[in-house]
Each structure stands twice: as structure tokens, then as C-alpha cells.
Length: 400
Image 1 (tube, rainbow, N blue to C red):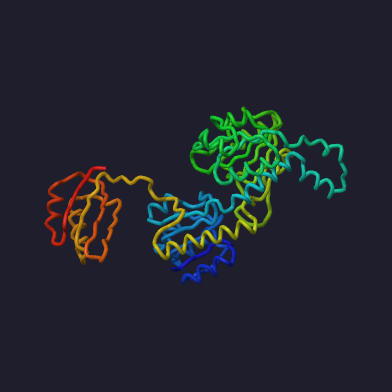
Image 2: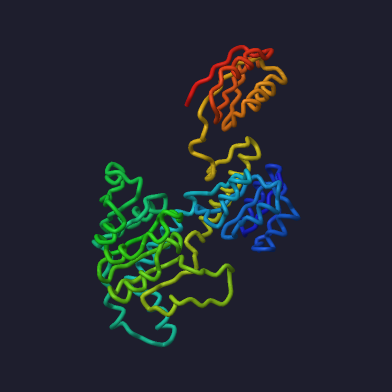
């Protein structure tokens, strides 16, 4: 299996894949048109990326592409709709960077409370100002609001408890029972969390439903002087509303993600938020620890090896939860060459669109049972035609 690594990953992933019989090429600087050209030239079966965007042209350039693996949790840098329309699996590596991102979130909270970056800059510039920097409030006993209780949110909760913070939380899937087991108080909305918390940390997935989740009503609900931490994706925060809240309510912000982030690893940087003293920006490094990157690399390798060996895709994100199948055709048959081909020929003539199919072989491989789920109109005459096929033992048709 041909594998192209289009971002820098741990060398261990190359060894793991090569030991599994894969042909691996690591070209970590592939982006934009250069990636598209490389896809056309190499025609890989598997593409692995971290921050690199995988766009429609990249799928069109590589007709042999079967799987795209995002070496991380989010996958908004991949055109998933195009992948699905092209029959390409998309998988991610969830949970492997959770501890690293949670550590940064806690670091940003403490940095805001103790003004650590400003402390360091003043000291480096020869300014001593203990009178200013000795007035931190402290976080013990403060209320931390968590918006999104996935792997990262739970890791933040665990660490915040170690700092004796009270915790309130919201997530679409959070129940009272789960909240009790986590030792947090469940609130009814992100705005309720914003109103109750001294610090709010965002940990929702970035998708159309969460775009601008921290918007005008969210910032209106926040307490005067509260902190906002965002280590998920920039699109989750309405930055205009955020800047107005900084000015009108004195909130302070720690962001690892924000609008118009540079697409390169190093280079010149100019962003309107850098001049705002109430905003601390880091370089989208939440998952960038050696521990996290090694775990992610090994998970990416596991996904590819499982696909290579079995055809199954662990962590696949673009399979339909429910197919549009309306009926199930069950065909018991002798396990002989051509039987299923004749069955599917009748299905095709009936204009039944097969959505799912499984063929289970009985012991000694003398007989088998095919389960064919399809979208179409029930037609008993088709069933009769299939029943007359040689080596078909029994046929049944049910509505789903």
C-alpha cells in the first residue's frame, strides 16, 4: 500500500508502516498546488496530514486514493464532503493529544492570572514591576466553566480539580449522571456557563453548529474581568464580539487558535490581536508535545495497518450513521461461484440501489447467507426470480 506523509510525523510511524509492508514517502512540506502535483505524480492510496489542507483538487488528482488520515483529533482541514463523494475514507486520531491540549489550557489560565508573559517580557527588557505583578487574584476556589466535555474537556477538569477550582459544564451530550460522575455541575447552555464562571475554557469540535458559539450573547453573559480560553478552533469564537467584551467588560483572553493563522511553521507574523494587552496568543501548539505527537503517530499507523490488513477503518468519520436502505433481502445459498452475481443481477434489473451487503459463510463453506439492504420499491416478482436461481436455497424480503 502506497502511503504519503504530507506533514512531519515521528520517525516511528515510518518504521511501523514499512514493517507492515507499506511503501512510505514522507514529504512534510507539501501544501497547496505542490501537494496537488505530488498527489498526481504519486497517486497514493493513503494520505496522512496534520495541518495541511486537503482540498477538492487533491482528491481529483489521485484517483487511487482510498484513505485520508488526519494525525490529530479535528479534521476541518480536509474536504470531507468531497472525500465522501469520491468514496474515500477519512479517519482521525482522537484523544491522543488530549493531555497536551489540557496542559496548555491550564497554562493559559495561570498565565492570565499571574500575567506571566508580561512578567517575563518586562524582566527581559530591564523593567522591574513587582508592584504591578504582585496583585494576581489566584485561581483556587474560582469557578471554571467547561464548554464541551470530550476527551480534552475531561482532562482539563481533572487538572482543574487539582487546583481546587469549582467546575460547571455544558455539552450537548452531558447528562446529570455523567456530570455527577465527573464531579461537575451541569448547566443548560454555553451562556449559562459563561454567566457562572470566572474562567471559561472551550473544548467543542469545530463544525457548522459550533461556528461562532462564543458570540454576542455568550460574551454578554460573561462576568466582568473573566477569562476566556480557546484551544479548539478559531471559528468557535466571534472575535468581533470578543474584542467588544474586552473593551466593555475587561475580560482577558488566552488563545491558541484564532482567525487567519499563518499556514507556515515559521515566518513573519502580523495579527490585529497581538497589540491587544488583554490577549495572550500562542502558536497553535496545543497538541505539540513529544508525548502527544508520538501517540498520534502510532495511532495513525494503527489506522493504516488495520485498513491494509482488514479493510476496516478505525476512527472513520465519514460513514453514514444510517443508510437510506428501505428493505433487506436475505438470500440463503450454496457457497458456489456466481450465485451472488446472479442475485445482484436481478437486484440491478429491479432498480434496487444496494446500500449495505454482507455474506456470512457457514461452517465447512458449503452454504452462506447474504444480507442485502437496498433502497427501492418492494416487488414480489423479483423475489420469485431470485428464488428460481440455481443453488439459491431460500429468499426473504422485509421492510426496514
